[in-house]
Length: 428
Length: 146
Image (cartoon, rainbow over all chains, first blue to last red; front, side):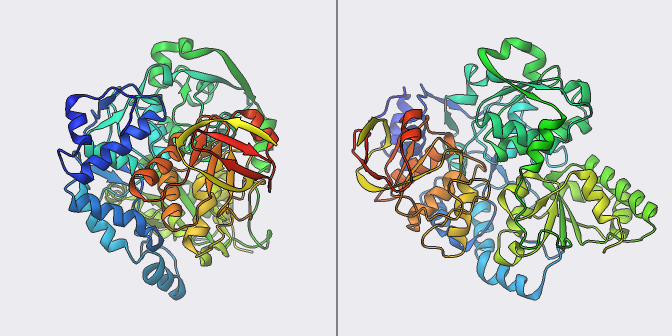
């Protein structure tokens, strides 16, 4: 094949088949991919673990599973262990006889086979299914400056922005290929120049902006560019503590799903912004001012996809991306207080909170677990997006505080405060 | 008739009618219904894309600035290709993004009949081309719109 990037003799040998046909095709894919972006070379993946976006054994994705079989049969296994996005089905989540048939017999009938493929390819363990692999309880936390071969848009933007790791917005399959070869093409967010901001965002709100709406507004405006956000530290502080990280997790997921942001800098807060300040901003960067009215405009622009726009919600999801331990505690306190205030004992709408299996395990060791259970809220490791990805769920009026879930499904977006109000009030 | 010159990311030839998205093309949101529920026309399911929502994408010359959204994007494009729900070609006005590039390249290396993809066609291309116009592409990245 013809290629432009500089390869080492070892890389050329792999390309020419020294490690088998499957490995040669994996390398060829990475080289063509890098060439598309003018990558000059391949660089080693330096993180301990990878993270894959594809966690679901969806029958219609059989081309992917066929490809995985080719990798396994050809001995092209991951050189590093990896975590993977959440599973699509959990028996604890409210469902119906019909939905169970649709899920298990038709949609996710490949799940067991795919789980087995993942284990062969290098999955850490059965608790490693989450979109928030960077939680302390899960332990896939890259160090600043490490080069990753990850996918999952919300995890990539978090790793780049909050942890200071270096990862492109890789697609599913490409991220696995990087982990198999142990190298990724050197371009984009892996390079110093690719991490410069080409947008300045001036936050001029009169109150703390809702993370999911602020992220959505920025994502829709800058698309795949890198924004440098000023004025947000006034509301979320200058320390990357648990609350701030959770805010940035939700903010980043919205920037990545409503646009294509892979890295953002928050003035005085995120590691590179603290170290380099405004020198991160490229000359001629565009400016986007966000005030209360702009956030209202953005929120009002979200289409409501329900057939009956006044329908009473039948299900509520909170936790896309998966909730942190601190968020679970906060939501538990808020739901308990809301129910008490309104004089009812259980949430009025079936409600599911989602978190990583390892976070749930730790949460279940605390007294909050019983408090939450007593409110009627179900705690699950599921991926709400995958749960809703079927014709029966599409007809259902589902509410969420996740802008990512809103984007990919028929669920209706409300702010966290609105969600709390809805689920803790007597049903109509 | 007007010609535009882009860069072939995956070289190939084809003729098809244009389908134009002026906003970012969300691959997962656009294709998930088509892949999931046997829609052979691959009608676009992205509620946030007023240009494409509900329109059949299969066999079209899909003209777009870039793709956006979930990092399943490239994998979804690859599946669409193998399942024959893909556009005839994809024509990017801007530099191709990493998700679409992954889908294009995986399709090129791992299938026998890759979908041609051209990028860097410029803003003028996307301003000029309209739904239904006849598009012919050549292996060198030349796009003829008439």
